[in-house]
Image (cartoon, rainbow, N blue to C red):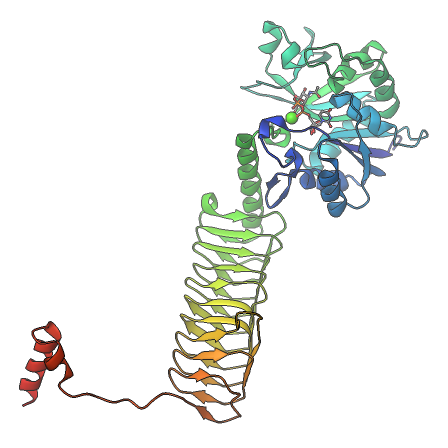
Length: 477
Ligand code: UD1
Ligand code: CA
């Protein structure tokens, strides 16, 4: 096909005043990543010869995020002349003079645009030999957006920005979505003629429509029936709206791929999360970052996983975990707090009110109740009794605890690191382990128990305890 060569320009120079934020608008996240990264992905989906991003406001921060996400992006800095037209004009200067293909223009603040729509728009543009094709939508509330002007036959005449529009023009409901395909040379000629003589004293990209028509070119707006594709983010209300819609789309895609999601309204899944079929997500589940969930796992309710790897048939209930690996069949929760570096072996358990950090817990090993396991390695098939603390911090530095295979740590132990407990050891309830324990030994340091007879009657006369003790004594007598 002629004119197959393609470049994409992404506009990201604006400040985003209406966000009222120290963070540049295009860096605000939805679906767990900056707005601009969603647009970069859409651009990359077209496999263009080049992607050019135009930056100005907070250019160092914006550039860093762009080049981290898409290293081959060409960065162009916009000068002091304001406006979307100026931004694109400067981007074109970064293209080789010989490039005469199509230029797709995207906005860094329109994050839900998808590859299929851009492909269709670009194909139509080329097939109809247009100078400009833009994506429009009919909107019940067009406030703030550019309006598409058409003659009585429906032929497009141009675009008028709301601030420059007459009352009659403001009643037009077909709006400019800010997503365009241009022919490079038609666009470049048009931009050279555009001035800043308008209500915002900016060089408007939208003025290219009337200029291309005046030069004898063909221009059209193609309406989409999915207004979310062109939803712009200009303030925090629109940020939340776009984020919710993105989440809805992500959830629907997982459901169609075989994931059971009981309550989409309270389930939040970031864009980079992967989930195999026959996973079940219960209400209030949040899957963030690069989390992956293998088949058969059941997560939730009320669980947040950040950058976690969850194996087959794992069960996690009412818990929070970051940078953790759960091997197949492991069980977690309720109310576990799992911090970075936790690895739970196959069939292992981290139970109720247990906190872990930098802890490798072997296959079949269990920490069922009320414990802290920090900076530790536990072998296979060991059990840690309720209320046990791995005391890893001496006030200055963190130290490591090593526990072998088939160890039975009694309830309410304190294991003072650095310390090693070898294979097959038992420790008595309440033991404070300060010395290494050799294989097969029982460690204990409990003081002998003494019962002081009659102490309650003597020291707590008349209390319910004393009465209970007295009647018990009579019964026994
Ligand atoms: C723009 C369109 C409007 C359309 C709307 C759709 C113009 C003049 N108006 O208005 O017709 O309905 O998008 O969302 O184009 N930017 C730069 N450099 C600048 C100014 C802006 O790179 O000097 C970037 C911004 O960072 C943003 C994008 O261009 O990503 C759009 O700018 P914005 O100010 O949000 O334009 P709108 O007022 O939304
Ligand atoms: Ca905008």
